Length: 367
Image 1 (tube, rainbow, N blue to C red):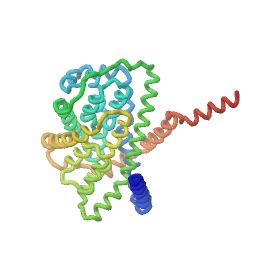
Image 2: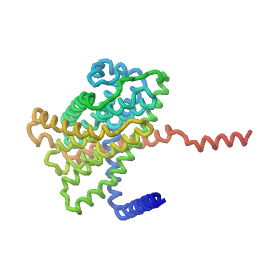
Image 3: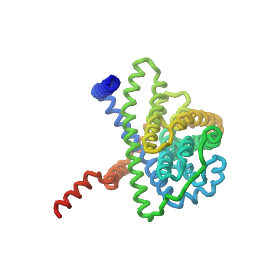
Image 4: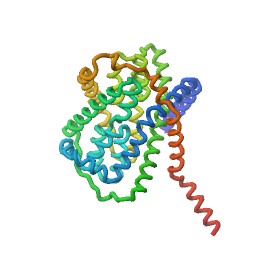
């Protein structure tokens, strides 16, 4: 009884504190939400939505098996089933949180062992090449080659992590295809779009949430006395898009290393999304948390080694500001795409069970 009372008081205190902070920091919250909406329109949706649909479509058809066949040697190298290689390839293409979504779907279908899925989650959680090339390379640095270089470094890091994990994390190599049923292409396309819209809405919601919280945390750390670089680093570790946006303000001594750190870690926002995706399965997220240390460190080291081979000076690397590029990226087309996404979400969302029950009652009353 005492524990329940204490728990109730703690929850009530957190609730009142949240309401107080929302009222007291309303200006910061509004600014953060506006920044989050701009990030969703300029970066997140253009670089993620189509790849979500493509990855879902490839997974539910035979195209993914054909794509993975030339890379079947990776199954023995990583000690994973051969059909699971396609999940690794699609995670490299789709980015966050495509790998976790595909692993959760296969685990719910009972086609892959959940221990194997937990280990694969370590190297199937990657930043998409479209976000790195377009969002970071073109928009932030004004140089597409930078995004390509960061993606190469993170891909090599994932391959090394996949090989190293076979010696430290126990898993099983079984993969069953008995429960998979073939569906018409039209139905597969509709399901892929529906799942992608749901995933895209969830991603944008988390981006807006953490974008609203970031200004409050930044103002708190600044009042405590921390430097602007530390505050920007905290912001990037919370949400990758906001952290990369602050790179252009020259708050980091090494902007390339900061971009590699934020994109390889993914941020707490991505980890929360992955935890939500894995709900309903026995896939453990703890190996992923430990693997981020290896992934981030190796990505930065590879970037330090390869960057001098591609770029001679800092002027070439940091040639264009984010504000100029953002004005180019912001266009009526992006706004139309956002409106189209909202309309598709309304059409493809399943009707709630209460509506179905009400329809049954009306039919019975008429009969």
